[in-house]
Length: 237
Image (cartoon, rainbow, N blue to C red; front, side, top):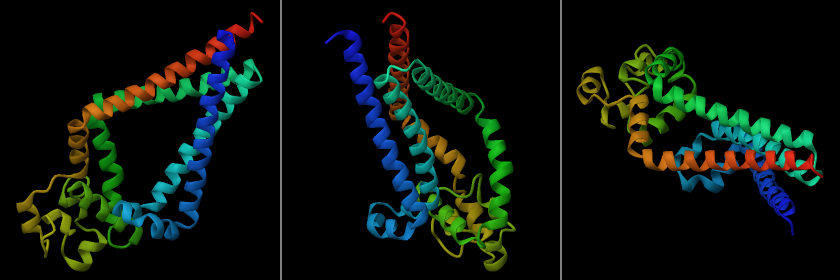
């Protein structure tokens, strides 16, 4: 088996795996979005955060669709030795790679800007929906209890929310699960906002996050290199 044939077979197998994985994620995502309760009934014991099935469903659908496209282009491009499909595969992976690098740069260099943007977007939603939208309220309660945080910035994010107007208290997570969680107790506990807490979690696990990111980047670079090798080699056949 020549070098070209070996690389071609590896390219097909690798992208076939991606394609099947993407199809699986897409199917699970659709299932979760359409019939989330049965999903919770089966896997609910794994984690309390599984209650966020709507977000998980949409996320899986998006990721699954992207993987399906990438797997299809790579697998068919190598199998059919199509320069058009190979260059499309290369372009899609390159766009994803650039987007990931750009996102990493923004997160690392413009954390303050990201917090401002999130504050102007999320804080009004907390004041508008927390206590009136059951799904939104449940997701935030789970998030705050899991991460041990309060609001996006602090307990004041919930001031004037439907919950506060009804009960005159803040979420119990803002008072370390003590009740009644009034303004005095919330100020005394001074529970960290979820934005800062998530950043702290990322810093604490920076090695793991960096390793995973480096691994994904290496796979993307290798995929682009292989697709370009096949693309250029076809000119010599």
